[in-house]
Image (cartoon, rainbow, N blue to C red; front, side, top):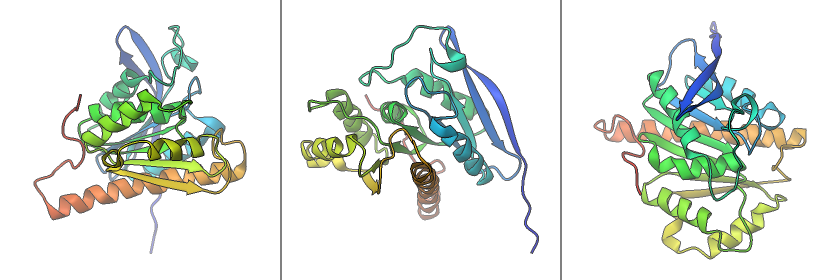
Length: 252
């Protein structure tokens, strides 16, 4: 059997975000697009390719599977550095995420996955309820502010749960935020855990500082993105009227 390797189209993009322009990189499948757009969000002040260039690898693999992918430099970071912006955990850059989603809509995507590391995970969690057609969020080692309660984190998670956003959290067992997250979940009402899944892997993931962490983050991201797409296909097969499974409207 002959296997066909489709070439990917990878190009620089300028996103509109109010009066600013954000630099991003889009990766498009050359054939058989599946209509799913994937937003890859790096840590605070980290360039679009992510720590150890992890998002470049994920973008290529996701595009080979049929998805359109976008990676971006946040407002005030990298090639988007025309504005003075800080990165407090309590104020993730939701407008940046939504600008990336708009670009994916222009590429004919109608369903979406948000994936982020560190600050990017907090931004994905906060933006999720504002993305109609969102299949879910892959949240890799988001920081938890101490002392608890981390009100901004709690409010973002609660809003995502109310909107029906599937939230998949991933931590390394040696990540400093792993025990904080466990404590955080223990202090939240049971209903706040709806649509929440948690994956703990050996070692330390935060910072993606070695080959083992790179492999673990890459494999977890690809596996989680694929699982969300498979779930959406199953929902659509059971109920064909749900043409775009996922979040249907924003929840305040």
